Image 1: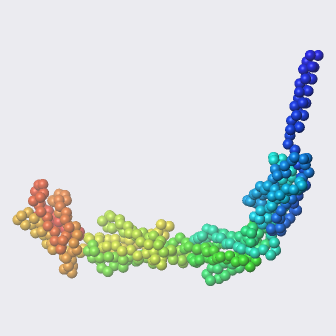
Image 2: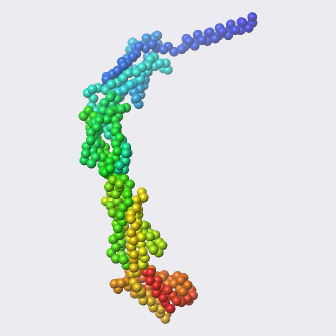
Image 3: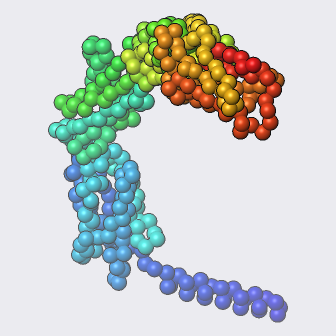
Length: 402
């Protein structure tokens, strides 16, 4: 019996508490508010809500939430009188075509929600932009790029209704026109890169609006093998004559010359075991190399190549000695006079030709450079007397000093 009394007291306290909470809960106004299903651009300027609420309810606490694509707005009433509140709709939302959402709320309580459609006006002014990506591709590439045209109305709305854009493109002085359907607010076409390098230009139009031309560049494809030709003036290994080596016009498989500035490498394999490399870049598809003759008799094997693997033919050159012999004199002061060193036309060698002195064990003792065709070796400065016979080497020719 005692337990029943406690239970009754607990239930009574709970009922009193519930009644007290209900009495202090906020009053939620009842609203009559709706929007039409469809509006023309700019037609929706204001919206009105009518409230029926008990005295003391502040209708200014009512908010209207609008969402149109990426645009959103939270609106407070601009005017309230006799329970009627007016909301002004921002122009950016009333001009945004497509589906928009609305929700009316009082504090955190929803009073209603829905959607409406803004449709474009038939007399709208239009604009259109065209784009191509990527901006370039190699000749002959299938599905090289995509051209996109985006028409918009005067309020920058995408065109959602079924329609098409006229796409015009020019390549090799030939113009082609095609119709491309508008899907998801844009139209596009895919196209191949033609076999001839050059510019591909694209334009588009929609309801009298024309886009600026977009440009797509068709680049030469990978180079194929080519020819190499040396242009020697003589075959003397004088170390000073310039040799010009040129390539044929380097082309791709479609006959396009490679782009100006394409790097080409020339490999020179010498009969003395040394390999040299010379680099050049193309102009109008041709690469030109300038190399100096060797300073001693030897054979050369030449071949050019590109990074993509295209190579030239191999060609050979043979160089003969600049001279047959040169004067050498050992003086009483232990000085060796070499020269004058002259060529086959009795001309003196240029300054800076290296002359080397070796002992009988082929050990390098001294090294000097020509000046006015002469070289002087002073043996007094050596740490010990060299073993005879001595050998002097200049431009591949050897002379002996006993």
